[in-house]
Structure formats: C-alpha cells, structure tokens
Length: 273
Image (cartoon, rainbow, N blue to C red; front, side, top):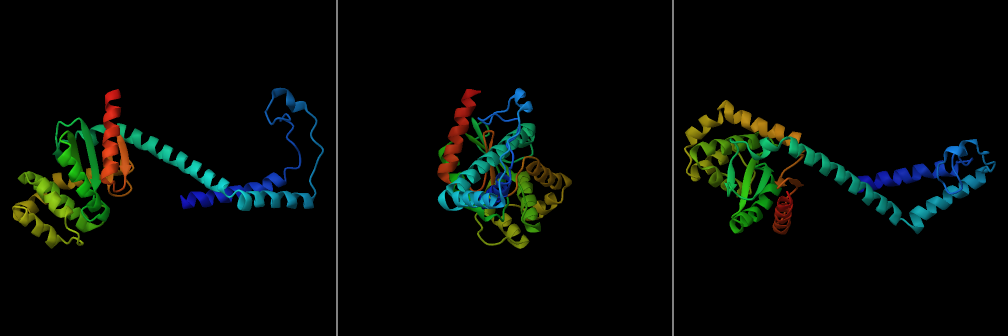
C-alpha cells in the first residue's frame, strides 16, 4: 500500500510540469475534450504560456494536490491497489483452474476432515512458520465444528533445510497411518525446530523412527516435496500459510471468523454451479 502511494505521488508530480508546459491545445480535440475525425483540420490554438505562467500553474497544481486535497493521492493509491488485487486474483484463479487436479485430487497428498465433504480447504504450510501455527487452532476448531469439510495438507517447506526435513518426515509418517497426529504435534511446537526435535516428536507420536527415516529417504517422498514446491510456485504461493477455500486463494494466517466466512462463501458459490 505504501509503495503504491509513493508511486501515485510520483506520477502526480510527474504530470505537473507536463500539464503546465502544454502550450498548444491539441488540434484533434473539440472544446469539450472529445476526439472527432473532422477536428484534424482545425486551426491550432495560438495561446502559449510564459515561464511565469507555467510556474504559477505548477504551484497551483502542487498546492491543490498536496495541501488542499491530499486525499486525491490516497484515493488514487487505493484504486491502484484494487486493480493490483484484482489482477492478482484473476491470475490466481486461472492458475488454480489449470492445476486443479494437482491441488485437489493428488492421491499422495494427506487428507483430513471429511474426505467426502462438500467443501475443500487446502493449506500450503511450513512447520517452522509462526503464522501457520497461529492459524492452526482456528482451523482445527472449524474442522471440529463442521463435519462436512475436506482438508488437504500441502507441505511447502520454504524456511530452510529443517523445514524440508519436517516435510519429509510428515509425509513419511502417512505410511504408518499416523500423519495427522504427527502433523498436529509438530504444529504445536512453538520453539524453533531441530532434526532431533522432529524425531523426538515422531517417537512421542507413536511412530517407528527407524522406519520413518528410511521412508524419508525414498525418492517418492523426495519427489512429493518437490512437486508441492513446484505446485505452489505455479499457483503463486509466495509465503505461508496460503489457503485455498473452494476455488479461491487466501494468503496469510486467517482467523476463525475469516475462515468461516470464506467457507460460507465457497458453499454459496458451489450451489450456483
């Protein structure tokens, strides 16, 4: 928002001298400022501005924008932000549609909630992401209240090698039918993770750690993490968490009310189709 505001201000001041130095009225414009084919033969205006007049015009415009009506810059900034958001949303929607099967139908991806739920929520997350851990309790609360949500877990380790280790461990835990318990235990850890901590959590969750390590080294697990990373890049995931509710993307740590609203909106949209 701030960078957009600065850009708007820069554009405004860039236009000031351009406006002030417009010496001749364009021959192609009528007095009302509309373009007409027959106006090309019109006689050019003879009025020009002296240097003093140009300076006066610049001062008037600067005063009008910066002192009398600075809200113009804010309004322009907001409009630019809306356009940027709209463009990003359009691109995201197209990317989700293109990658629909990889997002919603990958047989190797862990699933929670109700696998046959009427609404699907997908989360791209990192086990060391503070914001992911902030969003976790609210998402768990909703899954406990609403038994008609399918929840898809997409490991997206972007915070270093330990995050990658945690992602491999969690995916490998599914081979022992213990993914969700292990996932929840890792997410509950507020401290910075270490490899030793990951394996201790695995042990405490009832996993066979030796088998877990062996499965983590399997090419299929490694490729699954890589596929998640590529999928995230393809659909525009720039950070974690990132939720997809229904067909819409929601970046950032959504709170309980925000999640509920997004789910309700997805249900309404689903009924239309």
